[in-house]
Length: 186
Image 1 (cartoon, helix red, strand yellow):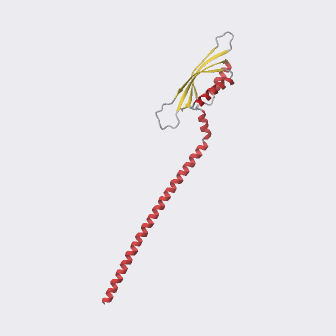
Image 2 (cartoon, rainbow, N blue to C red):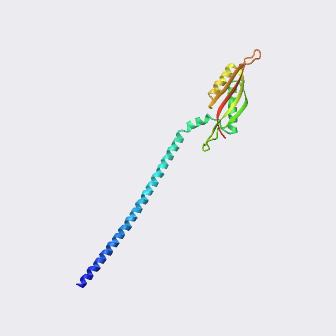
Image 3 (spheres, one colour):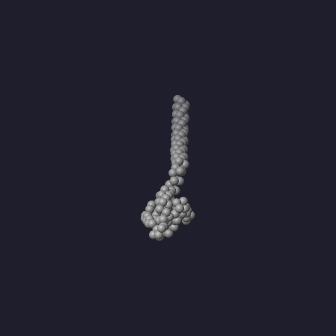
């Protein structure tokens, strides 16, 4: 009986040790599976974020491509902020004068930069004021004004003054204009 009792105690110990080993293995594998699942979830989240960024980037690039023509038109309304842009604009005014057969004299140029209150603004817009004097026949002066009005710039007229030349038998008219043009700041 003593042997049988010892045998039962040994068997009970073996069963307890086996249960502890099985339980420890289950806990170990459960934690490994849980960690693997968490890693997979993190990778899926990262992949979804990356795909979302790729999609947004693709949409932005498509929008940039789709709006290229419109952005070009909008940029044409502004005189470039550097000296070359201002010089090109004045040259365009003189060319409009040649086409309409009037003499154009730029007698004043005033650069007005925008208020720099927003430091995060990428492109600042200012304006450029010009004093123009022209001389030519009435129909040519009107033609010049029409061409200036439809020029691809955002031009506002501050002052327009026209008078017939006071010289005897003259068919010429004199004009003085103050205009403002939208300009990108340097």
